[in-house]
Image (cartoon, rainbow, N blue to C red; front, side, top):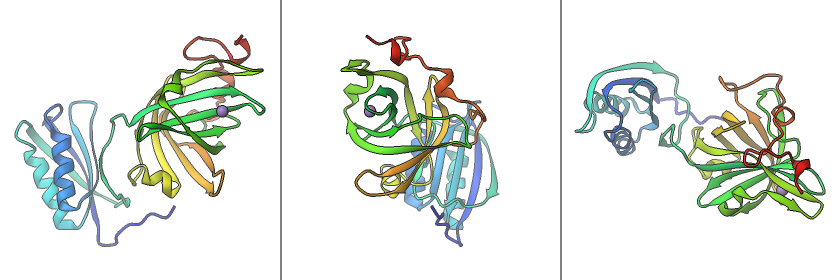
Length: 251
Ligand code: MN
C-alpha cells in the first residue's frame, strides 16, 4: 500500500523523561494531538519514560512538543529530547503498547488441515484460515483465507469434532500497529499488529491480495527482535497451550 505522506508534513520523535507514566500523560497527549491535527502515537517506554511520534504541519507539531514539555497537571516532566525524523504517513494519533483484545490460533483438523488465526475486533473474532499455519520467519508468506467471524466464547474451544478436532495452538493478546486506525486498516486490506502469545510474538502484517467472496490475504512476520529466520514454529511446537495435547492426541 502506498504511503500517503503530506509533502509539507514535518515529524519528530520525542523521549519524555520524568514522572510521566501512570499520570494520564498518554491520554492527555492523544487529546492534544487530535485537537492540533497531529498524527502519530504515544507509548510508555521501558524505563519510565514516554515515547512520542508526532507528524503534521510544523506549527502544530511544535505546539505538541511544547505541550510535552509541560505534560498534564499530574505529570512532572524532567526533559524532552526531540529529533526530526521522516514523516511516515500516519492517519491517526494512537496509544501504542496497549492491548487491542484477544488473539487465538486454533489448529483445526477438518477436510483440509489448517490453523485459524482470530483477532478480537469490535466484540467479535475476525478470522483467517491459514493452511500452513503462521511462521516466525519474515521471509515466509503464508496464505490466509478470510473466513466468518467467530464469537469470543469460541476462543477456548478444544476437542474432537467428528473425525477431526481443534486445539488451541496459541493465544494471548495483541496490539494494533501501523499507520491506519482499525477496523479501517482491515477494510483497506493492510493491517499491522503485534502479538503477545506463548509461541507467536512481535509484529505481523496481514496483506489482502485478492478481494471478493473469500478474500485472500498473506500473513507475514515483520522483521523485529522476535523474528526467527529459518524457524518452523508450527513443526517445532505442536502442543496445545491449554492441554499440552497435540491435535492427533485428541479423543
Ligand atoms: Mn477452521
